[in-house]
Length: 610
Image (cartoon, rainbow, N blue to C red; front, top):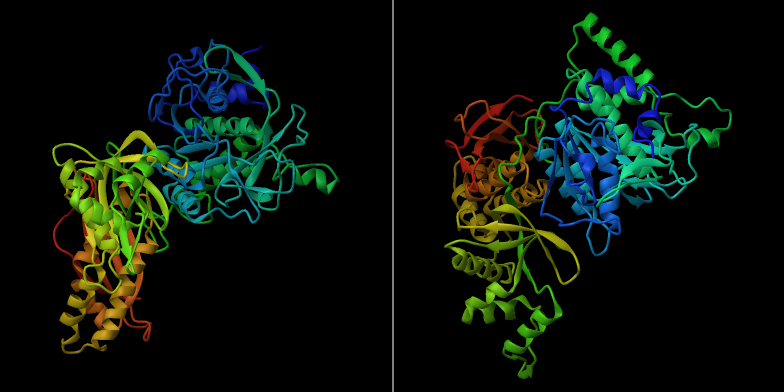
């Protein structure tokens, strides 16, 4: 097979690669896919690394590795090897997302991989996969991850799908994503390539027939699909960004879309299958030069390619976290919010608990134990705390497990006791003063995963001490804060109203800021939410005056120690009965450079004009 085949699929690609020097090492491209055989000869000397556990020896019979290795080699195959990549000199990051047993990736796991890519400093993300969606709308987790990409200025490129119909895949159908369909060597749309109304303005087609790639283990192969057209577009984007480092990745997206070779057929249905048009390097370079000349003439600031100037790093209360200036995740640190739960992993482990747990009496009738009843489990573990190690402890957001929690180190036994204590608080009646509504968990993300009884695979989050592990006893706090504010002169509300406002405030802070706690900014938000809980009396002054939470914003703090990863988190309150009234602003400064975040200084507050 001709090792240069892929370079000849798009006119002008060889010259662009030469002009860009094969790509700049400063440009970072993440590939979210199956495992990649980084030991294949085509990657010798490439600036690539795989995140996660070593998958061991990968062979051509491993379909997930076959897909991942093929996609990665289209981008990073080194000159002089059996597959010459499009951008061999850029820096590559490989993130495995598919479950080895099922071959699938839930949208939560795709979102998790996108967050990891952003945290690792990726400027462009290639995802040669997706899930069918009737409406083209992703679930909440994936929507938020895609929003974080846009806020971070990261270009996400995704395959349009191989169903051969007017149908959409996510995340490709998301408006800020660059979707990629497939055409043959002559530019005709391939029968299996998806199309649809959302792709018509945010999608392009690129060669996807018999694309050359490496086989895990050794050798090469040719295959077809939108999965293989996507890295061709990703490679071109990386070269354009390398050639003109003054551009942003989102500007490159706009340039690629503006520069497409549009359909010249009179057959509407045929043109629909070509999305916005064919990938055109000549057109992209023309628009890149035109945009550059116009900017120089006007003195305008760089555009984000989304109709305005570059976004200021911030997060809204809707949960889109900033990361354009976000630091790479420092050693896999996580600070996440959720509820504590447990899992057995296997039927054998579940049955062992059922055999060991004592029977229970219900209305005078003795019945067999139920290990799924958290109240029975808490009672059992109270007498046998060592048995807590036999469970898989999980952190859940809503009803979805997002991490397996693994205490380690000298304080592991105490951490297990803490988990049992948190679970005991969660199973109390919701009206109980000691009821725990949710928990805050710090830890370090490992490269290991745990398979739950349902078959879901979640990453293992390791904790080494109690610092930062906190149970939110909302009832007790609301009572204390409301009582403290209720008697203040000038309060507009009675104790019951203040309690309701404060409870709504805490719920909104939690639900609106839901995230996986991986990015520096997200850890700052989550710790600020915990700190807001612990210092709710501060906010109860505004709540007691009838104000409500309007938004939560975050930005990198300009005032911090040299070794800090510090963020300013601002909570703004408004008066719903008088929108002309000045806003009340509270600010935390949070340093997230360690496992346990820390607040720098005190909570500051001031009024701000509308």
